Image (cartoon, rainbow, N blue to C red; front, side, top):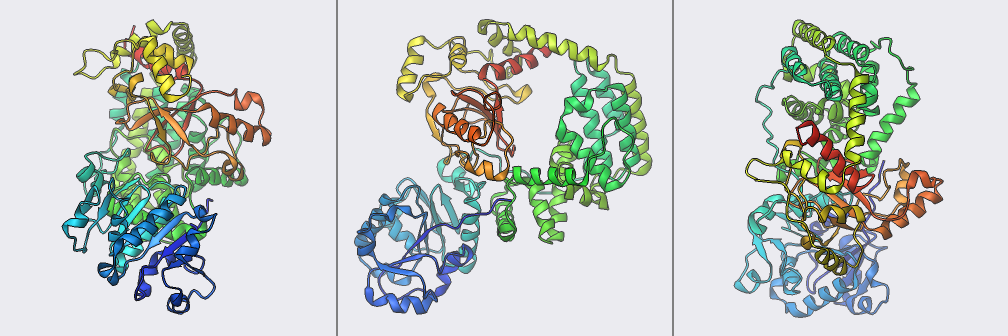
Length: 637
């Protein structure tokens, strides 16, 4: 479990009468009211502040004394509460103070509420920002001090600037969202409607999943699956295993354990390597299912111990960064706000499944069932079958909840239908035209032949994956001088295999048939800050399994070189060699061998906003060979 750290906080109080104690609601929720440093313009106010805000032990210091300190840049948050007197003050001296404090901070967040938004505007720090103007009367002087004032949003985040009205509800909302943002997942522009309305783009994550759960779910029938299996070629054994396994898991979650086991046992008999090709997460899912139902059949592997099941569950919770118990309810409140305000059902980094798990842990049973209905509705869409295995059955508590009847309530499958569908799928499986051994041999031959291809042959193979409106995926090659200019501009030598790709095609178009991103041209490359992309909570673990303590010692994702099209949900980027070298140093100190951590240099990463974890690529060339194998199946040669 990951605990959310408290921000080291400055509170800047404008001259004049002290504001209502209600304005400190954010500090109460962040649990820093008594630990904050209070800055005042009048020494005579110090005793009044201690009594008024009940902060007898807090540090209270004049602005002048604070600015004279050498270590004033160690704070995380500057909080400026609103006060009715601001409108009658000379704002320029106050604005100078804000500029001085902001200039002394590294990564300093600023929260301004109520009329304090005018102070922040007067400082000039909002010129490239979007600000909440709800319930605030603005004259022309201040309307021009921000990129946009939004009259509809009570709370707005624009990267490190947070603005809100001074109503108790808005202050509570702001604090809960800010606290959650320190744990990762809140978009850098929040709500996303602000980005669309004022900036003309949506943040790099999906936020508009429909919330209506009243539409009946499509019933995945055995006949439909059998028809798909009949159309598969001899090289598609892995795909067949995948389709059948997800279908079996769905039957189990609907409560039909006998039908589920019947399909799985037939799969293991017809395709002995099926579970191995599907991976360990699938095996864990079915073990959770059998634990919940108490109906574990005889299978060719050992029964996991209760300690194994507990350890697997802890690993899943840790990988999705579920918070510590003391932070759980605040995170749940932030999730409710993200869904209500932003329509965000992806809920990075927790996912909706993780949110349901937290709700069950906290005893929010009604909320858990409401969100579970949404998740099951999503899973019931025919094009999202893997949700059953990877978004539901991966979570031990969700399997228990599923089998209370909530899944069957949505899908509507009856006991008779389940047995009929299982039998139809079993017959289709038994009639597959090839064994797994033959298919794997074919796959190995194809993989080796593609690995032997030069770039000039490999890249054009991908053209079969092009979008209909494109004549070709391929672009004219980059010149050596263009690559050299990019390296000089970036201050690094680009990875060799990536440069070989550019010399064949300077970027590539999006590949919709396999949902793979397009790539930028070398002229468009620029360093991105992981924090601005919402990726700074990821540690550079280089794909190594680590425990929570080890993970925290690894360097955070810093600057990254995004080579894929930034408009695509899926992203491929390079982690710079310096960060990789630091990660290797830490991992070696933790006992990892050179064979595990690999050699220093660039490392490539694949990630999509719906993925809780990064996928570390062995190499850029290896990623492109994987795309070429998919193109090969689609007739790319």
